[in-house]
Length: 306
Image: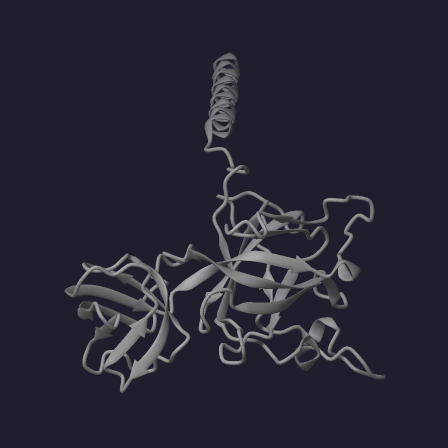
């Protein structure tokens, strides 16, 4: 009887060991065949939502001068600061905080083409650091339209006015739509398509009682009734200029810590920054109220790992 119990114990132990081996192998197979973390592709993150300038100057937003000022400490960080997502927060992307990021800037032209803006990029380390001035500069909006915003899929071309079946008069280059041009002012840009003129993005030169607008049409051949007009199209910045005296050096030895791509080429200009060691960054915008001189408005910033 004792021998039988002993044999049963051996069989049970062997079964348990075999089950453990099967489970272990199964787990290893699942780990080996699991979907790999995508470290090569990443979508654009909305770093700054559409808005005019944060202040007339950088100092109007963060005044770092004077004895006892607290504007440069972590607790004074604006709610508009962007927290760089970690690997744990975005498993499908698989990147760690810091390292290099690339940024693209867009905004609205209110004053013909080439509207301008100025910016500073600042950052903070995790939960306790002082503000770092990373880089400062200015930019110019180009002519590559923001057809669709990367983050929402929303149409960026018709935020103020979007009209169809608009009448066009060839002789005066006038588009007419009763009460269709509310809040439109001369100097804004319009995207026009239809019969009788060249489809293009044009400058609005005259607005009459919200019922008609005159545009700088390059080529016009006749009257039409099927025009589509979208006013206040957004454009990507095609030029970014940096103040070399404020470049963030990161490691202190990497000459590529701050770099520009495609700037001044009438393409989407990109700003590349080494953000190693930082968890929060903020683009502080100024000189872009959408009204003064040639200042742009409604500036958005997008970023992704580089």
